[in-house]
Every structure is written in structure tokens, then in C-alpha cells.
Image (cartoon, rainbow, N blue to C red):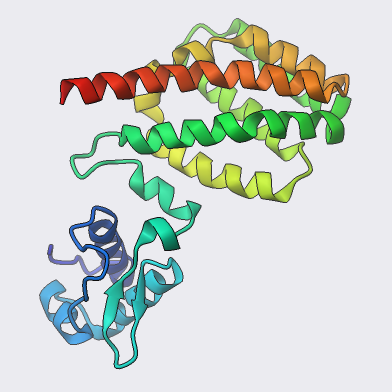
Length: 239
């Protein structure tokens, strides 16, 4: 393990242990060293280790067994969406395309439903927020600008859906997406450039056409899903 800097000690201990668990260098079922051993190895006080272990428990990454032993949990069966941003990068600092593909699949599954709810609950009020974004996209020349505006567009759609579960799920996906923001710019450019469909979606939401909104959202999201799937397949074939 790496020696810990003396700033934000507990946070750094937590992040280092979490990284090792998520990379599986600490596999499911493994026991962490004792609090004393961890403190000595990392060069920190035991209080910092104790606080870090508590946070790992809250994230359902470890459990403290009877007798005090701390055991690594299976994060895939115990963890939540809040872990996704940490899984977005590989140990080499590259985008984890498998996780990215999973996020796109999740977007593909829920975006049409979110758009339909937005048409019912947001209507014309929401459409008035979406159209200025569409106009900016129509005038944009830089792909990075389109990416940012598309991100804002969907943020408004989710907020206008009237569904708190969608909002919370979107928050988790946002953090994951931001972790790979620059890597996805080129890969998903076809989706970002699909301003025509977003303009139609804004109008459909404004008219309260929930079924049409669902169809348009699915059509739009499919562009990014298809592009990322192709990138994932290409990466696998090169390995």
C-alpha cells in the first residue's frame, strides 16, 4: 500500500481501500489487516483507519464480523449505484468500457420512460426550458459544446419528470458520466449532433405527447448506445 499524506487522512485511507476493493486486489471474502496493522502500514493514526472502515461499511464494501474481523463484501451484489463513478476508470486510468456500456444500457432502458413522464408532468413549461438549449445546440460548432448542452437538456428532462427515483438514478449516472467525460466526447458524437431529434422531443414534451416523447428518446439514445457498443467490441477484438 502507498503511504498516506497528512491531509484529509481518513478520506485518503477510505479512497485507497475502496480502490483496492473495487479493483479486486482485495477480493471478496478477504479479511483486512487489523486496525493497528493498517495504521502502521499506512503511517496514520488508528482513528483515521476506524473512520475509513466505517465509511466502507456504509458503502456496503466491507462488513465487520463478530470478533472484530473486517471482511470484504461482494460489491456487485451488495453495493449501490454510488459506486459506479469509481468503477468507470481501470487501474491504468483508462475508461472501463464495460461499465460505460452498462451505463448506456441503463440510459437506453430508462430514458424513454423519463421522457414520457416529462411530457405528462412537465409539458409546455418544461419545453420552454428545453427549446433555448436546442437553439444553442443548433448554433454550436464545437463538439464539446454540444456534449455539455446535451447533458443540460437531459438534466432538465429528468427534473421535469416529477419522479424522485429517476432524479436520484440520474444523479448517480451523471457522476459516472463525468468521470469519463472527455473520453466519451468523440465516441458519442453522433448522439450529441442529433439536435433534430432533441428539437422534436422538446416539442413532443411541450404538447404532452408522452408516447411520441418515448419513441423520440429511444431513437436518440440508441445512437450513443450503438457507438459505445462498437467501441467496446473493437477494444475486445484488439485485446
